[in-house]
Image (cartoon, rainbow over all chains, first blue to last red; front, side):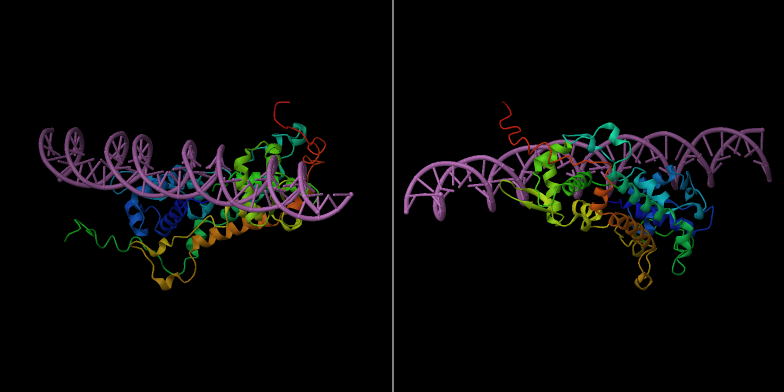
Length: 164
Length: 164
DNA sequence: GTCCGTTTACTCGGATAGTCGCTGTCCGAGTTGTTAGGG
DNA sequence: CCCTAACAACTCGGACAGCGACTATCCGAGTAAACGGAC
């Protein structure tokens, strides 16, 4: 059981985008610097989120990312599946039909019990993630964490050439 | 989200051992050939199960593996954690305290919301696996799948030297 | 016949290569705002 | 003054190395049964 760290990055970025006013785009470098993340690698995950429709990317100047759907229509599961894939963690190899103790095919009409238990657990996990939306996370934020959109606009020339 | 295939092997082996009469040891090669699995690699997972106390290993002739506890006292989660480890799939990196949008330490008294949701989902997953014991799986077996312990004992010299 | 010591064969356990996917990084294609020139 | 067209800068998207974990395999340490000999 191992979960990609990109899921954490994607979730925080999506929550941050949901905190901003609608139709406002945030550039990739802004999201990266806001969280202290490598901007080049973050691009990979943001692209995956765009492919899944969770985010909407705008090219060119004044471009950036914004939410593809309303915050209450984006679940945590959507973000997780967009980044880590939709494949089930457990794939039954039907070892009950192999080896000296192989069962007859007619004995295997019903799915393997082991596979059934693992699928049920996986369903419980996904249901727990599907029950929480991005809007829920935003509404539960401790206080005011607008973060983006406060420090940058007042200082357009924040770090022009690093030495000045 | 990725699950080791060794979990499937371990679960099937544990169920098979639970189907045999108590105090009966099954050799590693028997378990491997019964399921059509590589015997050398299966050793790694069986050793992990032994380390966790799920299985009990006996060395020497007439040795082998047997259950370390009663079937109703061994949960599916025990097997999964023994093979895949007990570490949580999601580890919060506290990125909310990094970057330009870092929060003050006193703002981070409560755990990160993202981490909280992921932990809750993980708990649901583990609870689903903990609710099922090996005895439950054995009782739900379709018909009679004793498998092991029927072909070997009647033929003590099954394959003495491969050419005979 | 019984007991004991040696041998022997058999078991599991840990150390050793190979391969796939996540991690991390870079440069190019596409698009839009800007600007200069002409009408 | 207005329109048009080329320019330029900025954005995201896809292709390229590096590393760790799972996969797969081997041989050695330890143990208990079996056997032979002595009593």
